[in-house]
Length: 306
Figure 1 (cartoon, one colour):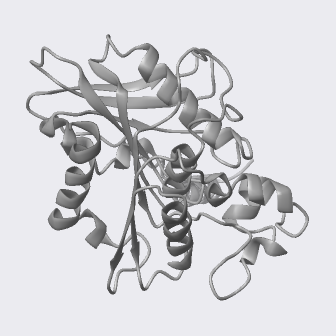
Figure 2 (cartoon, rainbow, N blue to C red):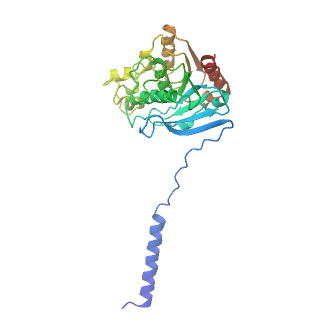
Figure 3 (cartoon, helix red, strand yellow):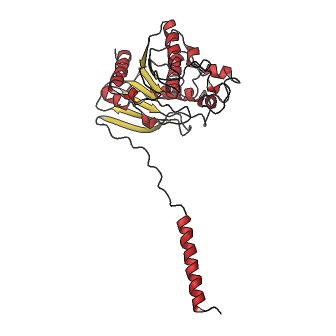
């Protein structure tokens, strides 16, 4: 039979072990709260609207609708960037345009880990068809639609602007509605995966790039997929007017990508303005500056309100 001293020592050792185990257990961390979009006076905000019935979780959009308007308004659709593998509709820099007489939509789309190209452009077109099909509900002037996006979003809006009169990427519901857009603002988007700046595209023979993940393989092994995913090969005289903005210090997407699209559009007689921003890098905050926002608003006003 153990002595009282032995029992006391044993109890103290047990308590010490329990305390050590608790100290080593990770403290539960609260999950990050969802991004909250602040209210905007005079603007009704509608979040997470599914644009594909029973579709993927990513196939949703947010709407910013001016209140107290009796007439339908032009629609601006913002498409986020993130290398086709990340990003979110919450980061819409154009929501403030709802105070300038526009209905603004910001959409998510299936990312490359969810589905490879052409899923992304199919989603963008599905969203535009959905919004046109619900134009009366959301006070949208369906024949006046502008699109705007940066980086991967710039690539997708360029695809929208150059494929308006073909139906290759129109799948799913609301096929009685067109996916053609009336104007495009392209921020530093890739346009030609086969011809990449002064150096070969890293995705030529490397799987671990955003472009390779987008098309499901290297460009060397999938040249036709790379071509089909490049807006420049769809350029025709019926393309939408473009405003392209690119920084001359962009080391992620060469400025050449915007220069060749600008040249191709002008060659067939499509209105295009290329604005080169000195010293700006990829996704530089200067793109969201007041002067550049004013330039974008002027472009949309010219093509959607006159």
